[in-house]
Amino acid sequence: MFSKKTIHFIIYHSHSYYPVNEEITQEIASTAHPNNIDKGFTGMLLATENSFIQYIEGEGLEELESLFEKIKNDTRHEISFFYKGVSDFRVFSKWSMGAWYMQPDELDGLEGFNSLKLCLNNNLHEETSAQTFLELMESILSIWSLKNKK
Ligand SMILES: Cc1cc2nc3c(=O)[nH]c(=O)nc-3n(C[C@H](O)[C@H](O)[C@H](O)COP(=O)(O)O)c2cc1C
Image 1 (cartoon, rainbow, N blue to C red):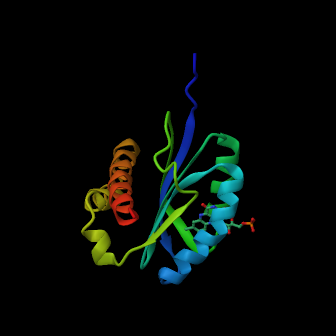
Image 2: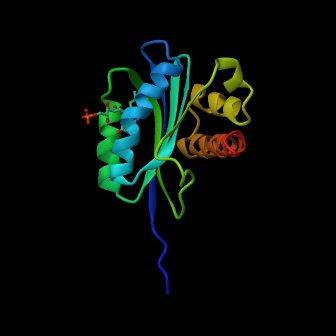
């Protein structure tokens, strides 16, 4: 018999206090990368001019919550929405923290982003927003996989 592992995840949206660019995104990722490998976290950080969207997943709930506390207290941004959930699989199993900077118009064109914006702007039920977040993440995952295919 094999037992399924419980994967805890956190997704959030935040407003950046400073204009974000590719360099800042990679700088955050280079701090996140070794920490996340060490703790067994995987995920994706999506950045644009003035906001971040991040999905972090792992087996240890306490460790995940303590990382999220750190991220929440990071003075570079302010979290506007977050959702904690469980899953029985990892969405980003191959990335300790994939990081992607996108121009606002690129992000606007991404499937699922406009529905997410609508949810966030209208304070929709958190489960609805979380579901929209996941759909956006899935669309990012498929584009990202295509982009990185050798
Ligand atoms: C948008 C954003 C996302 C971040 N994501 C992570 C992450 O996934 N993992 C991580 O270790 N640090 C992440 N950080 C950095 C943490 O906030 C913190 O600076 C880092 O963990 C170093 O903390 P320490 O010096 O207490 O170890 C992120 C920061 C920002 C602004």
